[in-house]
Image (tube, rainbow over all chains, first blue to last red; front, side, top):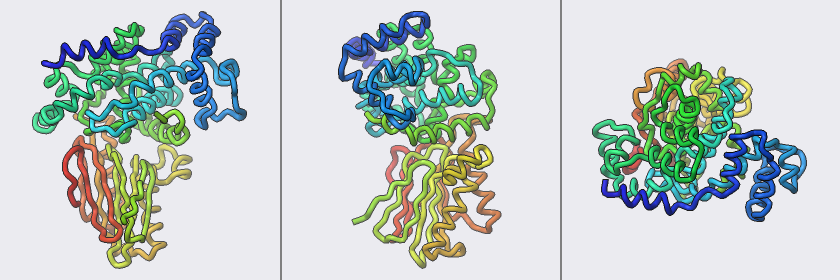
Length: 277
Length: 161
């Protein structure tokens, strides 16, 4: 509990997501709003423009010709993909160094986050789950709390692991018991601080213990479990509950999980540029 | 100097280079299968992801290492090319972790293990050593020169399997 006050200060000091990310959120809220405004904001930042174009031209998107402007990217990839690229580019910096406290090598938390985001879209495409404009972002940012909490988990690691090993605590509950806050709750506080839409705040807060009525939380919960099962950002291990009622609610079966895992593996082979950090 | 060859997820490697160490990281519900013929000193390591290829036959054709039922035969066939013999093969497996209370949908680790046992049983092959299940994360490596298999489980010290 001794850390709580310092953690609250850390949240305030974390540099907020760039303005373009906020623009994306407002566009997602109001699809009629003008996407050209977004392009204008990005163009003011040369480094970001260059980075976004690099991602657009990566093998993952498989474009036949090289694109050299955001306008072209918008035409060829569409607004949805462009939003996803912008969010991926904007959140990259937070995950760069984080994860050590969670027994993750540098870059693994980033890979886990991108893999979850890609998997969320695979689930939608392959299983017919409904599209939701915030799903990709929720999956990408679900572990944002670890960016701050990693340092504290590292300090208290032995105590946390003792609860996991000896008393069969899920990792999340052990975090909360020892540090006073878990990474899901902390992530939601960061999301609030950054004025994220309510749907995102809730999904981040609930990604380990989802409310079955909340579609985004349930889907992100699944994506998180599937990626750690595949060994992507697994860290200490799989000390987490798998919720069968989430599967029932989403109408999914074992075979859906397996075929989506196969698809994710395939996509990750193409996603080298996205996974750079 | 040992040359470290990393076996990624849904990947395998076979070698007869005595200085080679085959290593695979982050086995969650996936299983690492190590085979070794001590006479010709040939070994292989497979990192399989799922039990059965029928879930995605096209992907299995592209990458058989993804599945137990297509990856294991390929691993053995590759080792035979270097002169390994099935009867001499020492087999060690690790991984197959589960999330907590994985009663139904999330028991992929257990199903990977059952699929492997079935394949080995059918082919009259014994699993010599195994470290399976729990909710831990494993890293596994095979030294081609000695046939020793080492295992690192979550944050514990490395042990020999």
